Structure formats: structure tokens, C-alpha cells
Image (cartoon, rainbow, N blue to C red; front, side):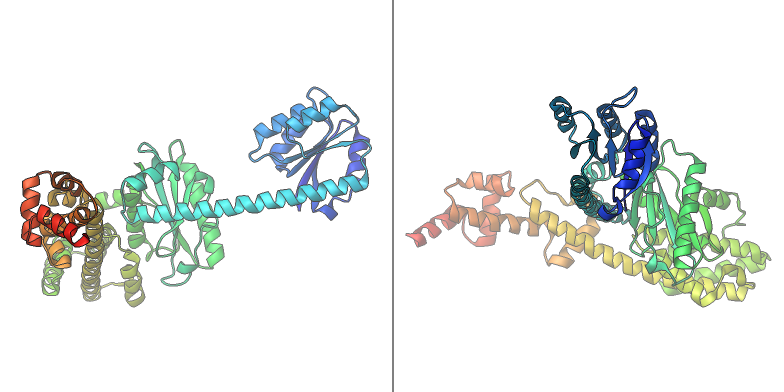
Amino acid sequence: MLKVMIVDDEPWVLEGLRTMVDWEKSGFEVCAEALSAGDALRLVREHQPDLLLTDINLPVMSGLELIAAVKEEMDPPPRFVILSGYDNFSYARTALRHKVDGYLLKPADDEEMEALLAKISGIIQNETASRAEERKKHNFLVHSLINRLIQGEWNSELEQAAHSVLGLTPDTELQCILAAAISGTAGLNGMDTEGLPEQLGLMFQDPAGRAGLIVRCAGLSSEALEAAALQIQKVQSQKLGVPVAVMISGRRTGARAIQELYAQTLEVWGLKYRKEKGGIFYFNDLRTTCRSRDFTEGHFVQVPDKVKEGVPARIQEAIREAFAAMTAKRVNIDAAQAEVAHLEMTLCRSISELQGDPDRIMCAMHKEYGNLGGLTDYYKLSLYVDRLCLETAAYLAELRASNEGNTIYNVIQYVDLEFRSKLQLQDLAKQFHMNSAYLGQLFRKETGRSFSDYLNDKRIETAKGLLKRTQLKVSDIALQVGFSNTDYFIDKFKNKVGVSPSVYKNAHMNKQL
């Protein structure tokens, strides 16, 4: 039902309007009544009515002044109807200037009142539906942009969208909150953004279906942040019927830091979710724990590098050496488990850096081996580490291949669009965060040509079209397609086409004649 609030300084008028008008028939219910504009303003804040029906002649503040004040108070404001005993055109004209929806004279005619309420009800419902649709479109756009950012995408277009759509500047202080179901499989795809406090920031769902919030945290107390996290955990846990963990990142500034903040929540998730029955977990607490914990001499320190190399024999050799050293030193099982937990965190970070999902590995490990705390001897622990590292190595190789394919495609697409500009392999490598020699190898592998040959061929093909279709000078065409030196252009054109640009142009003109 839509909410209507009635304001009149005569109690008998309020009584009559409340009881004599069939509000329900038009889809309304009376949410509040007020005898003065001051009381009305207080009740507006409390009840947020959809329609305000007011007299003009009120003590202290008139009905027209009340309408102006309510417009300042509510966004969007309610619809307005004036009910007055003044049959004066100047009042009606002022009311129209305030864009009221109706001006009725006391005593109001029942049919006239019902017709006006039906009209206003339709207007409100249409506006509500329109706002909901706009909000849905906006939320979809926000979700799409956030997902691009958490996966590490960044360019001038995204930078502009972060400012115009997300309202983020390079100085905006941010944190990431991520909610995830503890169950290895249950509930992950059922999570949504229900329960997320939209007023704190930007809601999204990550590729694994976990609900997230990018929080504008400047001026936000730690108590308010934790209260929001507890609310998220409560709502999502009740909805899914399974325990839910909520991970909170550290603080960074600017939209470009969103990937790092998201990766921090995944790091906490990868380490914590198997050991707890839900809860609120902070990245900063995790870092403090890791710094303060004694990892003996770091027996697994060589293992992450071997995992990145991806050679199974070398990975397993490094693992055997680590366990042999711990056995020789009689490291107790709790300390060994702590070292394995640190190794887990390091491997999860490596996966996140390549825009992968650590949950893919950790859920499978949890399903097969159970909690890390349940691996109470070196043999079980070594089997777990061996499997963890080999699975992670295979996944990292898969991610690298996927990322390389996406990157070289983006590079080629960029060259196809910007070939007229001054392009150099070193600059492209820097722009796409790659080693220039490696990028050159990928370019040749994908296109069958070196970068310079591909670029020159693209420019020459475009030059051929200009020579056929226009009367431009050869020197002008050279500049248009990206050659700053005309002689160099002529030389490359002749090597590629077999004749000079001028001969090619004349031959084509003779064919047309």
C-alpha cells in the first residue's frame, strides 16, 4: 500500500479525512497525521510518505512553505495535494508553481477525491517502476565495472567510468568486503547482494557468485564496518542455510587498487574458510598473525617458486627436502601445519595475481583431505602439500595460457586500431605489462610475422586503398598511415608490393580509364 500523510490544524478535519475517504480503494493507507507543519516535518522524516495532503492555512508555517521544506527533506519528494477553504486564484497559482498534483476546496467532493487519488496512485506506481528499472540498470553497470576491475583490467575508459559511474577518484579510500559460504559447494551460486548495506558503497558479485561490497571507508569507524559485516553474514547465512564467512581487506585509495583489495579478501578466504564455522576475518589480522608466527626457518620457502616453474619433479623434490628438514629438526606438527598454512596463503596469492580463483583449488583440497588441523602426522601432511602444489602448478599454467591468449589478442586489436600512431614494441610491452622480447615471441606465434612486419603490412595495405581512392600525394599518404619518413615508406611499399607507390597509383588510374 502507498502511504499518505494528512496535515490540518483542525482535529475534526483530520478525523473526517481519515474515516470518510476510502483510502484503501485507491491503494493508500494513512501513515501519519499532523496538526502543524513542524510536527509534519518530523513525521515525514519518520514515515517517508508517498503522498502529502495538507491545508494551506497552518500555524507558524503555511502549507505551501511546508511543501517547499519537504522537497528539501526527501529525495525524491512525495506527491502533494492541497485541501483548502480558500477559493483564491493566487493560492492556486502558487500551488501550481510548487507542482502540486491537486488543489481541492473544503469540503472535498468524494468522487473528485477518489478520481484524484486514483490518478496520483498511477503516477506514483509508474515513477516507482521507472526508478526501479533505472536502479537495476545502474546496478548492472556497477557490477560489470567492478568485475572488470577485480580481474585487473585497467585503461583510460575504465578510469573515466570509475569516476563518472562509480564516483571514485584517485583519492577515494576503499576497502573490499567479500561474503562466501563455508560449505565447499552449497550456496555459492545462490549468494546475491541481499543484506549488503548499499549506502556504504558499491555492490557486486564475483565470477564465483560470492557477494561483495567496495566500501568508501573514509570517516567510517571500525565499529560501523564490523556491524555492516555482521549484518551481511547474518542475512546471507539465513538465506543459504549454511555458515558464511565475511572477509575484509585492508585500505587503499583509488579504483585501480580494487583488484588488490579483492585479492586480499581471497587470500583470507583461501586460508581461513576451511578452519572456521563462519565469522568475520580481517586481512590485516591475518598479516599480523603471519608476521608474528614463528615459521621456524621457512622450510617451504623454495616451493612457491618451483610451483610457478611448473615442473612436477622439481616441485616434489623441493617438498621432500622441506619435510626431511622438518623431520630432522623434530618440528612439532602444529608448527608444520602453520608452515603449510603460510604456503597455502602464498599459493592463493599467486593464483589471485593471475586473476584466478583460489577457491577452485582450496575447495577440492578440502573435499578430499578435510581440515588442515585434521592432518595430524607428517605423512598425511606431505600427501596434502604434494597434491596442493601440483594442482596449483597446473592451474597457474592454465591461467598463464589464458591470460597470454587474451593479452596478445588485445595487443593485436590495439595495433589494428592504432597502427597510424608511432608504435614500438617496447612501449606496447610496457603498456600491457609484459617483457618486450616475450611479447615479440607471442606476436610472431599468433600472427606468423614479427611485430614490425605486421605493423608495416597493415600500414601498406591501408596505403594501397588511399592510393586507389584519393588524389593525395605519396608523402601525405605515408604520414597518414604512420610512416614519418617518405623514402622509408616507398622502400617498404616496393618490397611488399613489387612496385613503387606512384607506379601502383598510376597503374590503378589507367585501369579505371
